[in-house]
Image 1: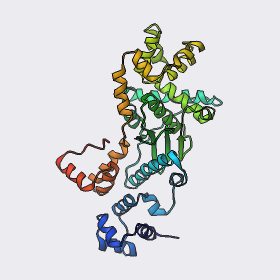
Image 2: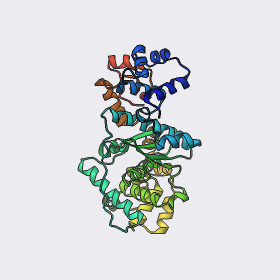
Image 3: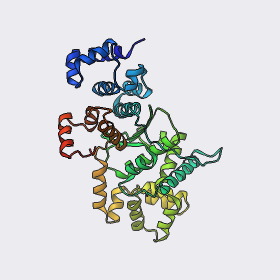
Image 4: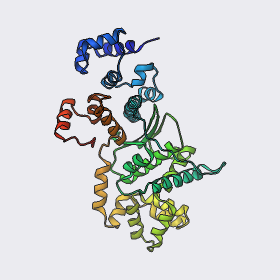
Length: 368
């Protein structure tokens, strides 16, 4: 059975570096590093954090040799899904390392309220109502542009956005102490917002404990999957709560113009709003078919809110780092539990450049 030293040596051998060169590259004391490899001295958590970051592996793998399911999936999957899984694997491994240092993911699940035997759609609706109550108890509202921050603050799940290419909406990953939602950058902010709520539904329902991939949340094959039905129902109710929506509709006469304005107010697509109103029996099937054909941009044009949509598009096309992961990685460095290297690599900047920024107070706190 291999030891920590064996695993570290194998990584160095694969890199083609000498022990001295690797120690120098990783800012480790070469003599002390040799003692750790020989078994004379134990590896410190800081040493392991540096080695894990340098080779893009988890501290858990260094300690145990066990490869988590998400790492296996990332290695064996191809295409855009492989890119998404690789990104998720990196974030999850980083959380696992932080967990070892005492920084646990602040996950806050909610209690599902659906009675036994309920349909999957009813389960999703009940779960969404519980989630909304959690939001309201903390005095926060689901506001425009603030859904990732709200999910991190209320539920303790990390939210990241990466350019993952067309045909891939997002994923929800659970494991090694992590709860992560990863979305793709897009020019359709309403779709990204619905995907975010959809993935939160997967996490809160404990779907697919390792990773749940959503290449297209609106694909026909996904619509008939029970867990997808539940996640879609959750997203619809979470973003468009019945009382709030009825009050908004009741204050105006429902016309093409007022419908378009509601889409902009709630930051949802016309199809999402139309189906929700149909479910609540506010409109009939024919009216639903009429409104759902409208696009997000058409709704913005009709409501005279194109500039607002353009600002949302700009945000939805930006990369976003997981806020909680960034916060805890910096905290571990500040108290001396980790070097600056993991924080720099997470931000994607040179470690010396970041050290200078911190010294001058110019660190952006992880904004990508």
